[in-house]
Length: 194
Image (cartoon, rainbow, N blue to C red; front, side, top):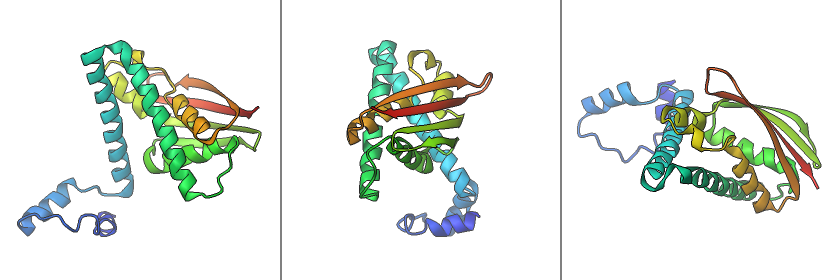
């Protein structure tokens, strides 16, 4: 699988210069991801670490009481950014409750591999889905001992960004459950068109 991944990423890595082939072989053998899954999970870990370390440093510099606000505004902006990406990819994307899941699915496919989803209802008027899995943001914030300063689920501001970008007149509701002794969550999201 590593060879296929090396081949798939050959174009991106084409300008790398190792100086000698022994070093290239050694580094690729020891450090290059062995599979697409490993690559994706490593990228996810880096993303969550960046988020958590950024919040920790903000807390240290300007106060722990500020990190929730920063987290919310970051996720809100991400919701708007992913909405714009979906709008570009899907010229006629619906502007109803199904849009929430469509935009979220694009984020899960590209950046949140730990989540699995289950669509419960998917209509223009009502969309309900369940997300399960490791919450990478909860995990890093717990490791950094700052999880008590951030509102969960962190995806609510993401959903609000979608709502505002597409001007969807709807409610956003959720039911969050923490899986005891893990960094896993189960959250049911419900959107009702008004």
